[in-house]
Image (cartoon, rainbow over all chains, first blue to last red; front, side, top):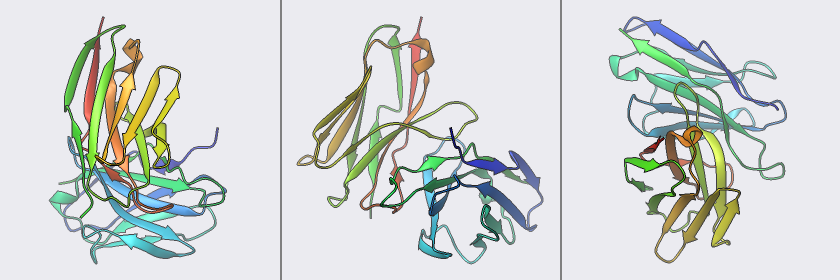
Length: 115
Length: 112
């Protein structure tokens, strides 16, 4: 069964450093998302991406964040200058779209720890 | 803004008994209500969903009900088994391909 994959599974970084979290969505999907989950809290939406541009973003997704689809398979989330409060699980998700089904399938997550 | 409230935050039931988790949503434009199961160290996994033109949906031991007027929906798990132990999230979405708004989660424990 096709699945969303994410790398790395765990990333440790120093405050102020840049990190890139990587995702490979399901191959025929057109819509891509990033969510985050601070330990013990609810899953929060960050950004959605379609047709090579951001469709929607939350107030969490400020200028320190960016997303990119550098090739036909990867979808990345970059945090330019990490803060302690960026420590969380980051989940990538994808959906086929209106014609192929709109369920969002989540990856296993990347645990980001900012020291 | 959009909000989804979920309760209880923790639930412990005897194996074989039923479990019920309840959620309310604030945005009356919401039309899709998925439920996710999250096991330790994994991402949320869709277990069942319901759309606003349906009042109830069942899949084996799992059922969801939706009351659009009251803006609440519930997850029912019957004949609970140890593998049902996990965190369950309700969620709402107001249009296709838009963001999902999650509830705060319910940690379900099944006592042997």
